[in-house]
Length: 174
Image 1 (cartoon, rainbow, N blue to C red):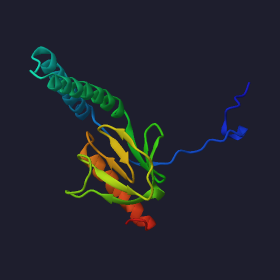
Image 2: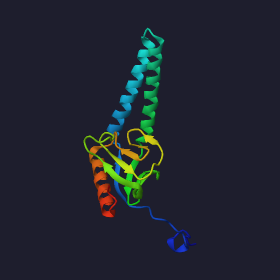
Image 3: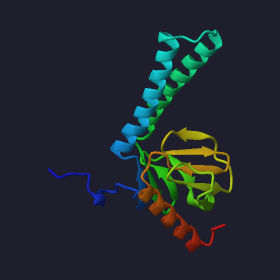
Image 4: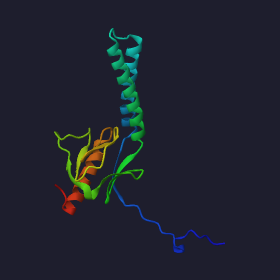
């Protein structure tokens, strides 16, 4: 009995593009980022319920901010499970979601005074791709994509350097 799963039996497999750089949150950074949001949310809810302010408006404010921080902490916990990958086709998530195709990237901003996430960089795109946000990892608003947050600086620096070299090689660096 022979196996019919070999490459000579007509099975066409597309090869995934090579990953040139990866950015992801380390365990400790993830723990600290999520933990700080949980502590903030818990403290706000505790203050709102244990010793409520005199005015109802302030209590509602504390409840909303506390609940929002807890929701954001869960969102960050889920988002930082993934990694960002740079391939010759562009920037994508480790699950395959395209963040920014390489042919749409016009430039990189990563200076000290650039509007960018902590330990990261911002990409300028030729067209808007819609809004999306994975707290602690990346965001996209209009023609901008921010990479960074709870990610290690050496990883994001290497990715930005590699991306800048790719863009310079293609002559698309603006």
